[in-house]
Image 1 (cartoon, rainbow, N blue to C red):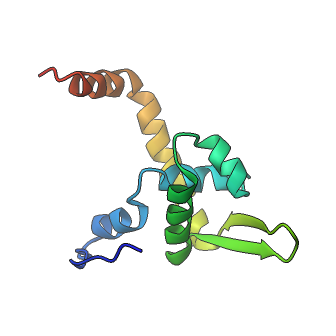
Image 2 (image 1 turned 180 degrees about the vertical axis):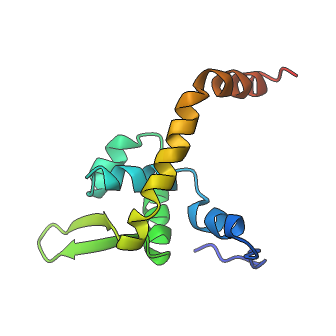
Length: 121
């Protein structure tokens, strides 16, 4: 597994939140788990662009940061479910606020993102 060579800068709240939420799919994973999509296969269907491996890595990181809890049921085949911890629940209003901001500025954000992707100045 990947091991960091340089320790992260953890001097302020923004550094800390960036360290915990850095990852393309982490915010979406937290939101979908909050909505009740708890099985890895459900999460994979909700985020089809992500590979199973990447989702598993990011779920493990969220688990390591104590934002999600993983429950493994002793059945064959194995059954796994994820849920938000109480600590993870505290992020939901923040994620909702970010989503609302994105919705409110959707047209402008889409325009500048597409302009950048198309190489326009």
